[in-house]
Length: 88
Image 1 (cartoon, rainbow, N blue to C red):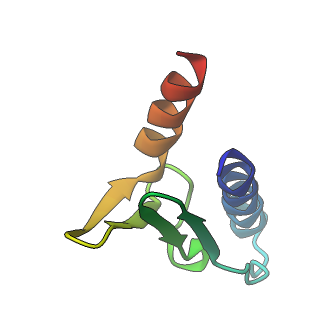
Image 2 (cartoon, rainbow, N blue to C red):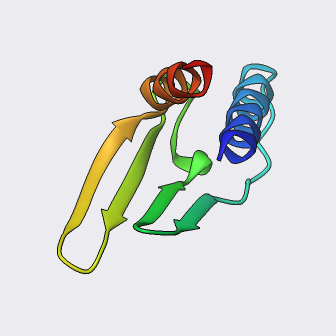
């Protein structure tokens, strides 16, 4: 997941720099991360619709056989939470 998010951040930064340089940004592939274990986790983000990494949002789906939860989260918040989790 960390590698996918780092790639997404890099893509968003590249697109922002291309826009600032006056060029048309190259379309990037959406991030789709899936984890299947005791629960199913899916994280999706289309970097082509956000002007910069700080405004990007992710669609997060978490489900198992009893419940399904779908929510939206800010990319910067997810990065902070992931780093905190990995450091603990």
